[in-house]
Image (cartoon, rainbow, N blue to C red; front, side):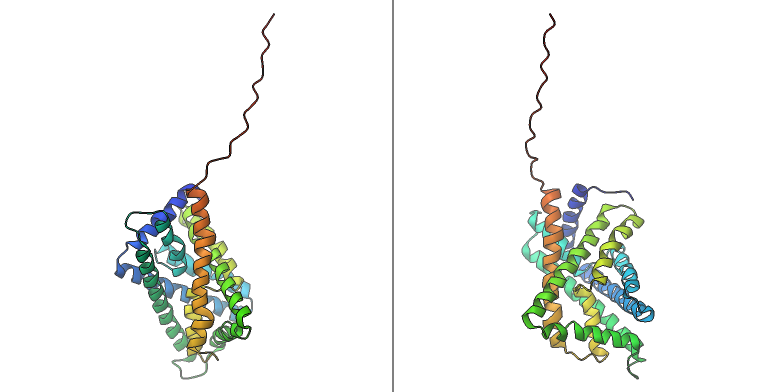
Length: 281
């Protein structure tokens, strides 16, 4: 598997965050667009598998294929840059500013959204034969997902918002673990194996991923889901983005940085008692 030790991949995390801050606008947007599109295709694939097999676990087992593809191709998700980019600021890398971090986040958000929205439109056309008939079973399922995870949260008020936020935190705890885990190996099979497990957990557990939702909810609206764009942004996308930020930066990036890159001195060890040798008589 060509294992990379935690101390080494912690430095790679900061290096990656620094590189993303200084990446050109064109490259940042293109890579984010492709990441959003590929992850959206993976979500459509997973929902299709779930509907056709009747087994959500099968869909969850196969969903990580999209994440692995976009990572190996060097594309960027908002959830990943939430975790990596701030580390370059925390580490005080030369030229890295809060403005640079926010610029990266903003461009990646826009690119991810555009890519996911493109696939949402394409899949809506496929599921309805160019909007000439009612959505098929997969399209209906996507519409119901959008309803339950917007107006479904709204029906519970503050408790629903809290639940949504915590699901988003837990999501990027897992997703960013996948991003970082890929740095533990220098081989393609090793990277895929390390990424697959936490992504499977997040998807099967129904946690809230801001980029997956950029596909599911707009396509749900296009397919006749009983919720609005306002419901989507207020009762899903905005809280999900904030929860993803907290989950990735706090529980993955911050923790690994604090213990593997900025390690504290070891505690003093008790001295060994030296055995006394009696002189020979």
